[in-house]
Length: 326
Image (tube, rainbow, N blue to C red; front, side):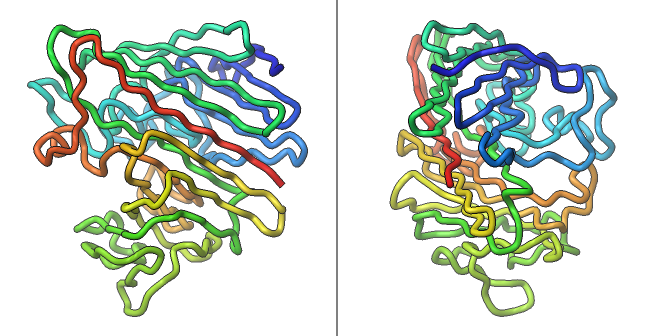
């Protein structure tokens, strides 16, 4: 059975789940984010860690983070996005911040008898309560995540839900590959960083080939090194199955992610291949592999009929299995 202990990361209290294969570090007061996911045999932490580093609680917001609380002390890792994703929006007259509410809220935590840990928080702007239960499995080198949203209000309410799982070096390097059984890619209609965006905006093409701004195509399964100096965001849909994998042939390591239900129908692929210029992401070399229920924020998803509705007392559960294996 996995062990559960307490620790600290740059002043943040941490909860550590450990098995023979994995070490998982969670920061309850920082959105219950998964701060580290370490393959113990190799010592490789597969998650991205920004070169600017994690700042202690109460530190001033990172330069360039503006009004986005999600970015004020973003340092990498894996966050829960709920009840919205992408740009901030308005829902029933309340302001929902960039990437939702829960990634910046404190969560309570409780160690369970089977070696798992349950994290809980209550939204401030929407009538939802979230539970997130993590456990590590010795037999399969797997981190299992089960999250349940409950509408604790007295009228129906809507949400979109996503995971903000971002991988980085040393797992990520030139020669890595992305396996993602899908059929369609979509790029944003506008460029985030015109100087370093490699992909043509506003395209809808068949996975895995995307059109380049300067002509030709690129195979999105092939991961370059930071010398590529590009920065793009891609929405991947029409999934044939809800799974993905990133493999490093030099290290002989593969990160796999499987999930349910099928409502998590989009994977956002954030390609920060050394070309993120604007602070606070300057210098990032990272790959986001992020299952979302919609590529739209809550306001736009509701208008498009893509938001999920929960009746009072209704519950919606997602499950993820993340493994790191040779």
